[in-house]
Length: 217
Image (cartoon, rainbow, N blue to C red; front, side, top):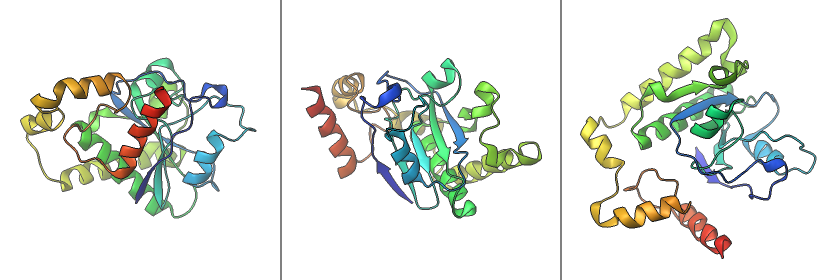
């Protein structure tokens, strides 16, 4: 699965990217409600002039790729209430294409985000948990049997990776002593999302940091 960072501008109509800093504490799962829309369609809709809704999200995933439209350390309008919007990373699962592949990609994406943050399954939420909306609707039939299966699959994905002790998880999510001051500055300035401080930086991620620096001038 390809992971693409394609952030919408802060000037997007209807305040879909308000630019409010967020320290996420959970991950919220949604489905798009559109059986014919791909991840790229959903990303394009966020900046389509005919879209008059404020609703937004952080990442959308389909059978081929995942697209990050809003930085994971910024608020998006997806949960239906203030607490969810201001504390949770929103993932939209596309309803088009090969459902098995799409859900498989969503499972891997969710597990990856949990691992990077040292989080467990208790950090997962449905849109329904915040506002009572039947979402993700593709996981709702049979009294949320699909949601229970999704959680089991994420748990298996987590267990399939390298097992880390609690101490190792804490160390992984802390910057090295020599870089701590610079890391905290970059996080507070919104140049980095505050996660995985000891991870490698891809060229895509470097491009985002450079773009943010230029936009601040």
